[in-house]
Length: 306
Image 1 (spheres, rainbow, N blue to C red):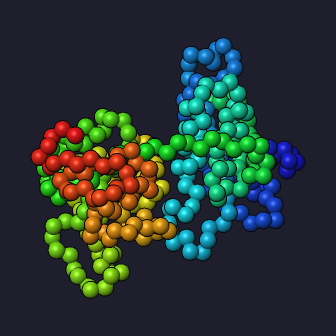
Image 2 (cartoon, rainbow, N blue to C red):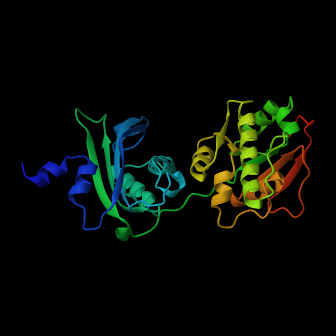
């Protein structure tokens, strides 16, 4: 069997390696990702779902030397599965070719992506797998896929009195029922933290104090998950997870960071809400700052209804 014929049936990762140009690229892959969906041009394929299997390889620019194990600086695997889920949710399609083209275009919107191999197979249309495979590179795109509208989450700042309140679970229940991503923010605990007299180190200590309190809040309700990176937050907002913001990484990595110090946690939450284009920030048990950049609403920690 010639190498061309052999490669025609190999996994996209082998095909990517065999067709590599002189430019050295890294690769990430998604193997045997199977979903059930209604798809197909034949009448027998309408009104019922069938399994389709995705194998995707993305060639990406090599990681910088200073990546430092930082998930926000790489092309996350979630971006590949999200591209598939997005295109499957947009409309019912007749052709695997159309689906593959759209998935490839969406992946190539990511800054690190250079070339993508997409193989899609129907698993239930016969004794074998029926499918298509395409290869697309950034310079082949004729148009760009539409970017998703950001989710505009609701944020809720809780004072220590609010965290301890008997109303806490009820507040989370109410916010969860409103079908918009929810992110919880807190300040530091009332216990004293070390003082160094040094601005930079005290900033780090105050950020860590907020993160300790975030974990304390998360212990009150299993639905609340502490997150520290923008990648985690994006995934949580798209998948209905309630997040508790651990601020150190996002604050310290920000090019245009907050003007307020971590010792002013409501102002810090306002800055964070503005970066996320939040629809609202509810402040429970604390005073509202002046001239906020996002819509604010104050609630007493004794108030059960939001």
